[in-house]
Image 1 (cartoon, one colour):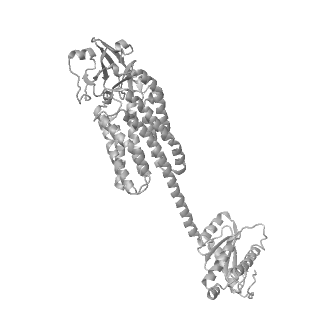
Image 2: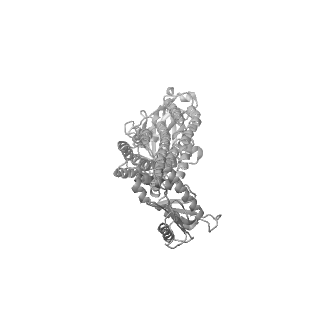
Image 3: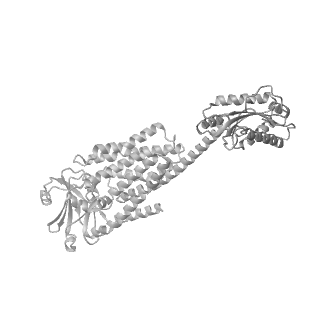
Length: 574
């Protein structure tokens, strides 16, 4: 939808241009002292320069001679229009067929107040309000004091004042709409940056601010919001916003394109060429009288390297398989083409078509929309990669903490849980389980049957309310939950007895290949709040040894003599 609105804005902005009368081929120039009047200039008999060098004028006051052909301009008051960058005081003179002169003086403030959309001034030609006098005008002379840019002369044209008065409001609204469209991506930029912290979003935001600032200023909207702004301040603001926007674009390119898709040496070249306009702007563009037309040429020339480098970088990244670079190609190609045209005209290499000025505004807004889509796409892809990385990390963590055969906790996770228990004290006892005569099971029935027994035991232990882990071979451990509802003399023996009976029955049911019962020996140790794992494990292991040494298939939770009678196989006792 925003693209459609931008296209409509482009055509609406371009349509007024075709009704004006450009005078670049017909005007002539001359310079004089600042005290000279039109009468004295004409009396000297000095010819006006109409050659290709007519814009290279010097002197504090420049005179521009314009032929006036009333039939080519709509009826009504006629005005002189031109680029208002850096202008001060001006005069407009109308020379009638009898040689008489009608003049109008405009202060710097008056020139500012008579602004037109797209950075132009519009000064009424005296006498054109009267149809009879208008038909007698032969030539128009424009006096410009201390012009700072040649475009103030080269872009002069004659236009209908009534028509541009009518267009001022709708064109201003249209430029405001373009600024609004360009600034909209800032909303989700801030939102996503707050959540994801991708720094290319900050550089994209700075690009948007520069684009909106340039459009806001050069279109004339700045005079609506800030009426006291001088033309020199507006010109400097235009130049700085473009320079900052280009610098941000170069750094955005480096941050936005996938890692490894731009070679290291090229990254350095992109960075240096992108900040060059900022450096040149700081050196040559000032509000004081030190600014000159030559300085303007240096300013525009400073953009050439980054444009050429970006063209190469886009092709370079495309060859390396970058997907993100497609958004730069789509968004920046029109700007580069129109920008190179603007540079050539800014350096007075040729006059160019006025419609291209409007095209640049459209291209800048279009670029913010396309790159906004690119940022959204890049965020989505980075998010997917981040989620994939998290999944891989979770899987690696699970692999590191999980026993491969039984899919239960391993010794590493068991030790971490015990350390956690020293802070939270969730477990009161540690029980060591050992499968009785497990080697005989492997020898008689094969390792596949033995592995199945381990899996069944692990599954059943995991199903209890306690923390279960396999710590090696046929040995398992159980951290018994601190159940204060149980009597101390019966806990954890009752719970472990039930667990052992369940294990014997489950193995018998689920591994029918084994003919004799598979029993378990268990050693139990109480866990005090400050107990170290080594001491608790040593106690449980000693009691497990007592259980196995005294006939197996039993639970030992106190230190006993090794002379206990052997219990018959198939029962669990404490």
